[in-house]
Image (cartoon, rainbow, N blue to C red; front, side, top):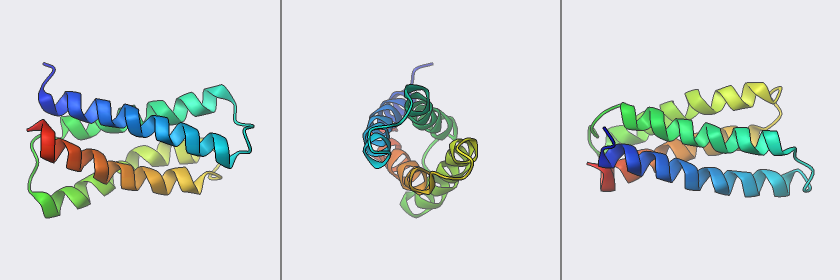
Length: 109
């Protein structure tokens, strides 16, 4: 059940989520609530899970599109929960989707 792809995607989502926490905390002037920071991290982990469930990598050009699409879909949940105020995290989520998909392409299959 725990395939290499699943492990690579969830681990990379968790690491990228930690980067998001730091960025969001700094951008907020160190005023962010802990539950929002956790939700942002959890969003990135769920992005990794969704990307891992998408199956094998279709090839390098297509993973850019698929990663950005999944990043957009998953990040939109957090973006809408913030009242559409955290655009940076939303856009970063699109880029992180591509990064997670690339890591799965490189190390997960």
